Image (tube, rainbow, N blue to C red; front, side, top):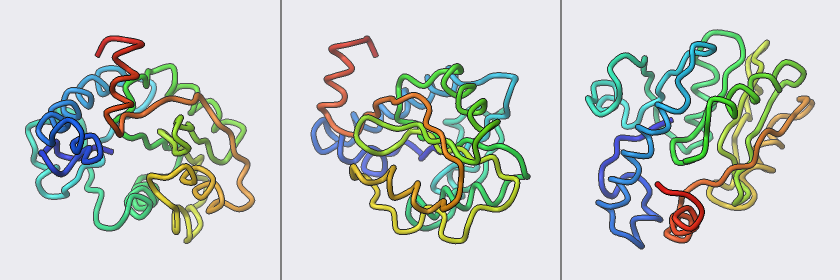
Length: 191
């Protein structure tokens, strides 16, 4: 899932600390690096773009990658729509603000779907960087509804929308939402 990297529309919490233009610049370069890091012949990489019309025609994203619009609603509405709109089979949805995601992390999530109905990649802040479904049937109607996004409850709330699903967790990774997250990354590895 990617948003057009316009100042004031992406990474606004980070932008409050470093400036909206700098936050958009970071997100644009982070997204490009992420796409290089996860492209792999074992799966299809599809961009779920926002805003819909602009993202579908944007020259920012690689032209060879297929795109689909995220549509309206909160994050849960948009992710659930993606799961319902693609052909049956295993699907993993990730955000674009997780610098450490690699092909190995994605492969591990798809492997987990071999024995589970759902997989989550927890984030260090209580949210998650990945949600995957085996998708032998459509997700329940309440899938990702009433989730307290951007809180430490996001993962638990999301799991609660999948009653009866066999769930797995994969690697815990950190996202970048604040200047403190960005500084932590600078302390541990180069951007």
